[in-house]
Length: 67
Image (cartoon, rainbow, N blue to C red; front, side):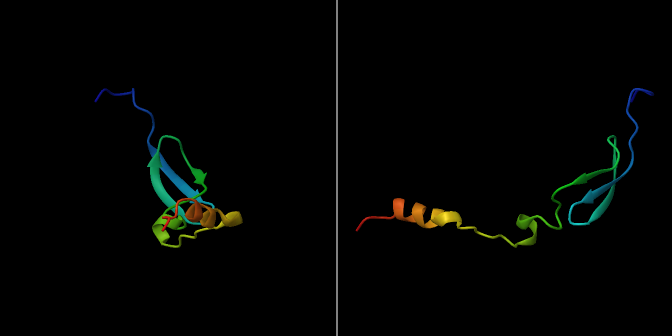
């Protein structure tokens, strides 16, 4: 590798909105994120199916098999 052409790769603290913090290295520095692996529904298994204004029922009715 050539010397002097690469950016500084220093320690960074990544903080999530839920309060979880991770220490890593980055050229950007410390920053915050909205969702992390500790609070994301896909990783925690806490999925919620929201039926807003009957959209799920409307979909099922529209594409139901006719007998």
